Length: 245
Ligand SMILES: [Zn+2]
Image 1 (cartoon, rainbow, N blue to C red):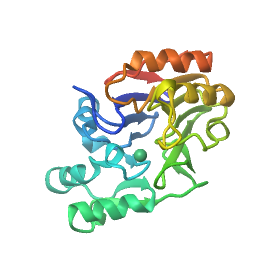
Image 2: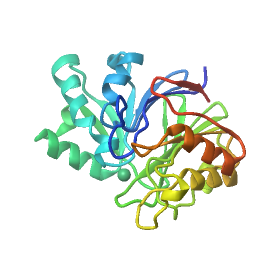
Image 3: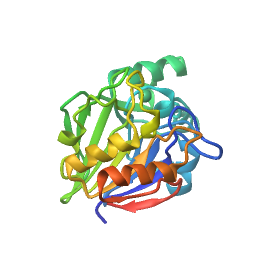
Image 4: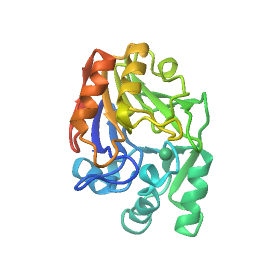
């Protein structure tokens, strides 16, 4: 196995009925990563993974729809599983926010790694790059590579970020597509499915998964719109769905 990803939640801002906010389980041959801890994703993560087997957590930014389960899983590790040194890779503000919400320093459970734009790390068999996008706070997109296979996750971004440069040649792109084209608004720090599809085409990615869908919108409509702009295989996000990269 090289890389595969399981959808734990893909709603933007708040969860649609029966849904969950942003979160993905990324698995390589040697490691299991929880990528974004959006509200509702901890329950879904445990459907697929024993939390004792989680190797690291990546958080794009501290907006609650990407972060809210981090102070919760702290409880799990501290009081139930008695795990410490759980690596968390995130912008500095994520650590500050986790410490504030739990009411104490979380370093007794989490091994913090503050990441920034342009950083690159290696965890087990996986090489990971970080890039800051355009958002209201520091959001880091991540790029995971194992044995020549590459997955990119944008987190949140406005239209001003050069997504194509960071995602260039990726096999699989999980991109934010909060709105439909008819809902585009320059005052909203997000992009539409149409805008995501255009960027995926520029980047020459293999397959595209539109996510961070605004509750009330039909994900299938997002897929159709993204596919038209992308011109390549565009997958429908569903909780529990697993993709081989
Ligand atoms: Zn955000």
